[in-house]
Length: 365
Image (tube, rainbow, N blue to C red):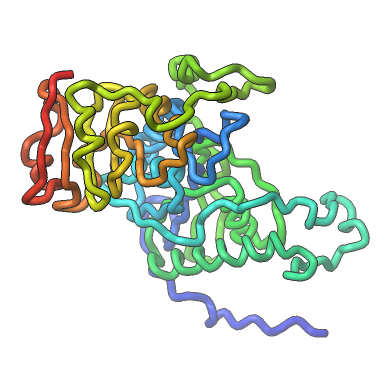
């Protein structure tokens, strides 16, 4: 069997420009793994779509500021999952961009390492030197790889010639990295908020600039971001959720001035909490809402609330950092809840995200 003849005219026509590298370049692809997520550290937390820990938010804010300063981009594309989308918000906000969600970049469901043959670079693959993954021989890997590469193809075609940041997951980044270096299967470790960079230069072959760069975390003290006091230490640096942390929604307390909302909201309502008095009140009163967003710049509050949201599997509730301007559409919320003394969010910004008939509730914290 002869190899097919390669036609260089089949290469995509990618615009090239001078960006100070000493040669013309086209598409630049930056891969960023999400910050530390709840399931990265909570040993017994079962959640398909967890958000970030306090440390994870700090990492996301660091990588966002670092990329804005050192690695500016034109577009930020994210996996739809919370941990990636939250990290992407930090990257995008630091550069005045909006996050574009891309289906197909989600993490794999189960490990597929047992489908891969053993390999050593100085020896042939053990009896499988011609191994090619197929749906019969490696169904988990090929299914995942096919999904991710379809998303990658759409990204590279849609934003050809641009500087693209893709925020996703370790497994997703491994598949993309393998594709960029021409490998069938390549194991690539990515730390939380590690950054990788690939570049299309004028000689028309992808070039690896760096993988898993993370100097933005060098002066980050993890001890400054403790877990909630209820978290129990476990082996290997992990923590555990104590048994019976939450038995039911009724176990959650609520701020006395806001408790009435649990009986006031309708199923169709969207509610926005800005700088809530505690992490539990928004959970308790948002039981019947269609969607609830909790914004705070207190990273420890965000983790405490997200821990309980994940335990309750309350997927209609989302804890987010307080990015300004608010990353939500015009006239999106039916209720806005904000303490009287909060001056961070101006009246015009509240009016922008609130519906014309929305109720703005101000309370004394």
